[in-house]
Image (cartoon, rainbow, N blue to C red; front, top):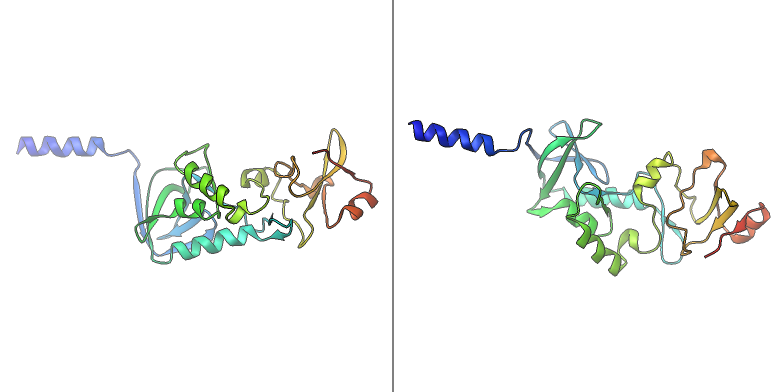
Amino acid sequence: MLRICSLLVLVVLAAPLGAETLAGVARVVDGDTLEVAGARIRLLGIDAPEKGQRCTDAQGQAWDCGGFATAALVRLVAPGVICDGNERDRYKRLVATCRAGGADVGAALVEGGAAFAYARYSTDYLPHEARARAAGRGVWEGQAERPERVRASGGSAAAPQGCAIKGNISGNGRLYHLPGSRGYGATVIATDKGERWFCTEEQALAAGWAKARG
């Protein structure tokens, strides 16, 4: 009896402190957030485009990559999920890895170009991101802001339909960046700071903006 009790103590001590498992039907909040059994879950190791975020395709046309990410997650979790995590973020969400139908949901999102690998918190999905980038899937079809940058800008990175030229204000003055140019992907538009989107180069030039180098 003493031996059995000792084994049970060892098993309890070996279990991660604060480990949680949630399972059931999932309600999708956005491209990387779920709600299961009334609890919010943030998928570990991925960062999906924000709601309303727009990316550009290979032709430089703006498209709703935020909606694409959310729809992809809805499809993936339709069978129900099992999520395991052992910590919570500053919003009190459980940060977890979720599986649906036996597949890793985060891996599927990144592989399909519906989310980025969030290497700051996990490097598990970097190979999936590399494959999605090489294939030009989803956000890798053209240009896309990292969601982290969008959040830092106050979420004002959404482009009007068909207007993908970025009018940025910096120490170099008012410059516009064309899709595919060197600085395009790293440039975040904050409209509250006077930055803006343009539909054509002619429109940008007429407004007094100069073309960025590269």
